[in-house]
Image (cartoon, rainbow, N blue to C red):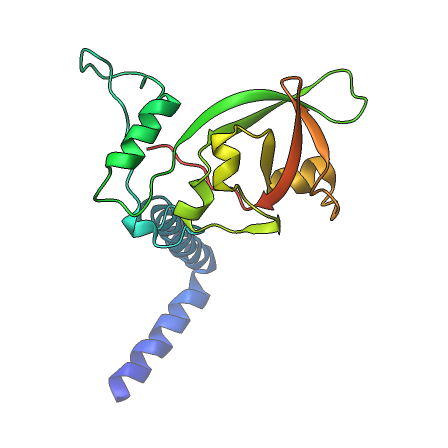
Length: 194
């Protein structure tokens, strides 16, 4: 125990004797710890838990179509009848949700020009399969998919940014690519790229 105290006193004297070196060492250790923390946080969010809002994300599987010749590249879009066929034939999955990212033009009220927005066309089971609930209003019903009902669920961030968190947003109408659409809910964003 005596040698430990001697070592600590000696270390303190050296730190006070060479303050610039001590500062450089302390900054180096701080930067190293900070960089490691940042990398671990990044790895945790991208690899270990990439979809924190999804219930049982470890059971989530992504499927893609392939080009007819089997080559890699852009995946051809899945048609609605193909998606229905996959859903009917799938025996290993509890549910199947389909989505396709797209860019639309959004207008509200008497606006003459639309705001370009990234969106996703999704199947009616999208939110149910992911286990994500709406924070305002509701998500899609199975009949709305079959009828291709003009309804939309907006993200929480978009609701805050575009509509200033208007609590009466559910039931309001917007135009997406000049099609009158009803906002039925607000949900936390869940976006994938498998």
